[in-house]
Image (cartoon, rainbow over all chains, first blue to last red):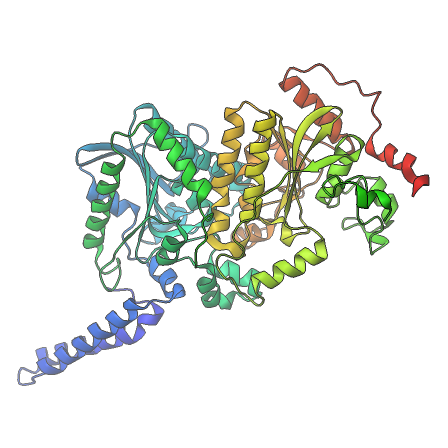
Length: 320
Length: 304
């Protein structure tokens, strides 16, 4: 069953009407509804195109959070010939909101790290909805160290609403863990490439996405705060998330203009949630291109370029 | 105003501060509610004499109390693009900035200075909570980078006083990017083998805690300062239970291994000097020959 978003309701109606006609025709062989179904489908296609050709910032947030979008686990399962998950921060626990391990991607061995949101109630709870605790960042730090020592590129797949606002997470030094993870990103002498596949939520995203190159899926977002959070603070009304989403300039397209995103990976009309395989393959192609771009660069160059990139971000004048 | 404030270069402005008498002669302690006369309060470094609550301390006042004879020089910070997102909520961001600048009397939420603490040269960075909650935008990022560069140039330690609600939402993703940017500044200091000491003051939260404020060589906090990533209200809403007394306060963080020391404001100078001088293998500072800025001020009073 397809999960329709709020703004896709008219679309859902058209499809269910076509489905109804089809079932009517099955019962009554004399009934000819082909033309009607076809015209409904053409209309629906047109609507889909116009909806997705012109998504507002808030609608993009909804698409970016769509439960049917391919998640980290889907990319890992489909893109790598081999994957050995590595667990734990060697300190306190293994954070299931963060997947990570050794992966074989074409000719490359690499370390992959990513947020996983889960795909049904059970896995979502297990994955804490993709909200990492300090252990998640510390696992990432450990894996980045491993990559550095064995000269393996690091790929991070970002998809998180943000760090987990919980008691234990704070007690175990959430802030310090995020800060150290960002610091590690800046320090490793291997290529670090990042793909924002859904939601890039504030500090939790920065801790993984401080990379040599940041690619974003067409309908993904990356923001300092959720539109709902921003609305409740600045508008004193969490219902103003549409305005907040617009003002925050959090879409991949805006971020490219601001110099935070380097590459936008297009999604077929209708979004990644409708075309999982196509999108996973497209992400694979981009990962490969990014890996080739950094192949053979020495560690000092990689570290220096990454630093320069972040020192200069937002420094040039631009028109948002 | 007197002849000297026109004569002395405006940058050496600490001794001859512009506003001697605040508009409100009385202020109320946020913790115990005692009404405090402004002079009593400022003589006590903005610490409530009744309950020892460490009230917010403006960068200029902080530096005046920190540096020998209250003397310091401002380090120049480059201006970033103003309002890169053309942000508007209920108010335009540029209007908010204008009002804040006027009310606070400072250009932005961080002040960088060079000076000496008990003859120990340092670079100081101090965040201004009264300026839009001390929030970290591009200016604060630039300030920290400028501080690190100046420290490296002069081979001095950096002492940073943090106070912020977090990242400045009105600068969107570019405020978030100050997390990696300021982390690069910390890295530069580390590579230059210069001490980077963070004094976390009330409150230090959000993206500020999750970047430069938690990357110090030594972490000192003022008593009872709130230090966290997610604030207590957000956590209570998420987990739907009451949080324990003192949760996310300095002493709690000390217990949980996130801080080295919790130090009363009046002892911070000596504490910093001891740490810095031992870290950098300098001989012990001799306290006797230097008057603290407060004593200094009292001596100066008849001149006023």
